[in-house]
Length: 307
Image (cartoon, rainbow, N blue to C red; front, side):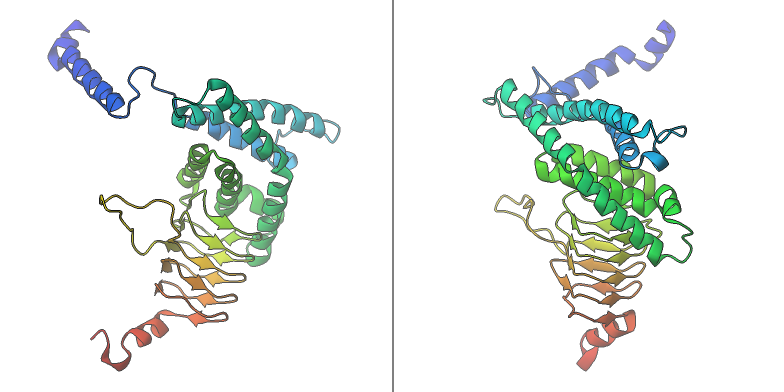
């Protein structure tokens, strides 16, 4: 070991890395008491347990009996909510202003956790509607149980619905970690800020991207590689990106968007519209529209434009 340390100059590397680490903490004014971040590993376990609580017969323990389900749900909830409260507290401590007391931060974390818990029945109702939409929308689906345990789109939307609730309640970092866990597992990237109504179905799913300020109505279906993104990123006087402004599409009820479509900017896709595969769309379309590549090209080149 000493020979290896000498050969690779470990001591010098450790010293240099420490200096860079301390400089980074100093830049962010966190050198003396660097707060801990929420744990991705813990949150992954928490979300798995939330899935088991919401669907104990399908995502819970394999040997659950009818008599034991309520006990399992109650015990699991008590444990995971305590753990979630701790992760939320870590986030609040990470972003807390110096003048904010520890007592206030602890109370705020408890309030967020409690409000999250009270809304779990609503989340279950929304996910049930998503499962039903997938079952009705995919002829390959043999049962709603198959949809729940097999479909990546359902896994992604389950994570999103839990994360969106936390995002609204004031824990956006915990929410973002939860959606990124689903992103890693499914290839579906949904920002926790996106607003998605009931009966949402992502078929196949890989490569789907839904931005922070996107608004999606009821009974909307997306296929793989669809992007609901921003057209441009505004900057302030200092040249920094402006955060939080509405920059992603609004998709109204009963819209179908086929594979590879890219829809950019704060535009509106009218109710009942169909957007064809590989369409690049940066303008609003009226309700009941049917947009395909050929139609988009004919508009762009009309009157010699674009030639």
